[in-house]
Amino acid sequence: MSRHEVAVLGVGMHPWGKWGRNFVEYGVHAARAALADAGLAWTDVQFVAGGDTMRNGYPGYVAGASIAQALGWSGAQVASTYGACATGAQAIDVARARILAGLCDVALVVGADTTPKGFFAPTGGERQQDPDWLRFRLLGATNPVYFGLYARRRMALYGATREDFARVKVKNARHGLGNPNARYRKEVTIEEVMASPVVSDPLRLLDICATSDGGAALVLTSLAFARRHTTRPVTIAGVSTVTPRYPNTVIEMPNFATDSAVGVAAPDVPFRDSIARGAYEQAGLGPEDLDLAEVYDLSTALELDWYENVGLCKPGGAEALVRDGSTALGGRIPVNPSGGLASFGEAVPAQAIAQVCELAWQVRGQAQGRQVEGARVGLAVNQGLFGHGSSLLVKA
Image 1 (tube, one colour):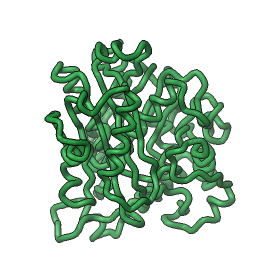
Image 2: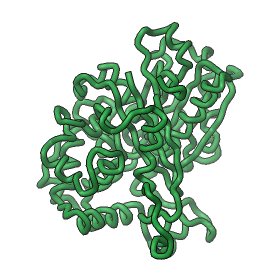
Image 3: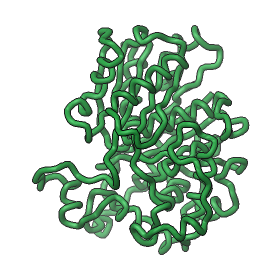
């Protein structure tokens, strides 16, 4: 057992969708579900780690306190974090650190979001020092522009086809059918994906995840505390929040620049590969130990990149995995059995937390309708703007 481990005693979610309510409502719903799952009361929580949302005015920037207030002031200690799509992983890491330091036994981690209609846009104002604002202003580059460029990269380097990308959507949509928290629960065909409107060539509308409202929460505890409440604690065995090493040779959004590797040797391990590697090293595990993975499918093509980044295959091998069904339920290594972002959409502060919820249900054998048989070890991987790594390993 790794010295980094903490227990996941409770998990809970608010279903994803477009509900149009305040994000606090989703967070409270998820938190109460996680506490009920853990068999604990709100007043048992000693520390609250909230994932911030940036689109809901001032309360969104202090999500931990906003949700604690809604649950009822209890005097619990609190922190709020933001790391774009890695926000949930950072909140988990803060709570884990408090527990491992012996500063608390019971922590509530919660993330929730209410998203605008359509693609994400920068917040208002003139912010010429902000690279995220600049990429919209100078290039008109919404997130799908980057997704399309990454897809083109796969086609150029490895011969990926539009049908390969569509196969990812077909797989994840089928997985999402069995998930009551998924927003989209409808099967699609390759033909339907390829006939949907072009958004950022070569990607179509059904290749790209939507924005959603939703919430997710975890009750994390020390292992000693967990063993007093269950004989089979699920644990988080590794959390990675790494940053890139210079030069980062794949230009991540929102950056735009020339390739510095022209003048400086590339690092031995590229940024995305280093994200999961950090979690593997903490846990003393490797990709060969995985029974399933939840990866960050902002687009269908990006899911294929992650197969390689987390070590499921060598570079250029991802298309074969999706073609032969290896990453589908019943295959060698199911990926996104929850349905992934393809079935959920993005609710940014909740995403990484929701991935851990799914892994916990899977290794407990409670993922009804989408269960990976015999699951014992699962990996979640994610990535936030400006070099926020996000990966977690969960095991039974």
